[in-house]
Image 1 (tube, rainbow, N blue to C red):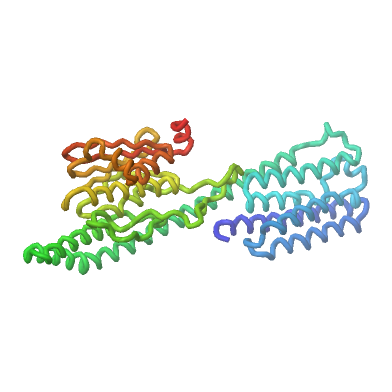
Image 2 (image 1 turned 60 degrees about the horizontal axis):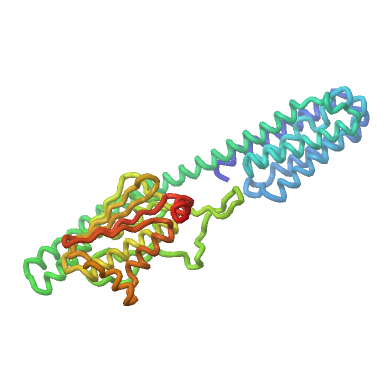
Length: 415
């Protein structure tokens, strides 16, 4: 099971070595007070050791781990049936000896350090009950074994978790590298064929004029969009976008953020039990598809991470702003998108070189029921705890969207 394989093999070696050590102790003690019972317990330990060595790592979960804990605790608590009260009072090791640490290590590898600590506490409690039930003074019981078992469960569980995280990072890096190589291969083929054809169509259309000029302009826009796509850095996972219908004026690329169909998405489970932890998305990956020959997208080199739903809403608000440019600006108008992080907030600015918004026009549109800015832009950002600032003049309009990086900051702003 990936990186866990070496851990399970090491635990198997530990179980076999501990079993041999327990058998050696029985031999040296002459079978203790009751040799038949002692060797019967050792036989059960040997059978269970084989049982735990046979299953593949993927099967060593849930019921099998619980059974491992129960069988090991049973063998430990069977010690009085093999040893006399004097052996226990003299501080002799239980008949299981170090074999009791097997389920502690197994829980640490399979479930992490917390599960390893709980398993160690159960086995230590069984050992404490065993000794106290035979008249041993609790104050005189050595705790070295319990402490070492607890530390083993925590440390092995922590290291196993770190190994799994490192393995996942390596897989992600390998996917990114493979995606980069594939992108380079496709980019070379596209440059030698599609991009050159689109550039030729654009140039010849401009020379011919008329309807051919419009065809050449469209070819130029597609060339710019395709060139931006093949030059964009690869990401580990594709952004959550789906094609949207063609837009009037074709100012922006036909990509729009998608919401989960069930309204909930597939958030990761929060191990603390406080609720689902929503994964983060790099906002740059959702804004890049808007870039065309007339829309320039500028973003920093570092990721702009936002919760997935917040990133989708911000990208949708940017799309609504570009729709307004298409509807209300003359042909040939340009737009610029600037995304940056500023003081715990992600700020996205959409600016155009159109004629601007007349004074009172937004209020009039709201009264007439046209809620594009009020709902599609301002409403989305406000629901995220952010702010929208609109500045307009005769030289163009600028819409600034500011969204907090963390949801709790947005709640503080709203309160």
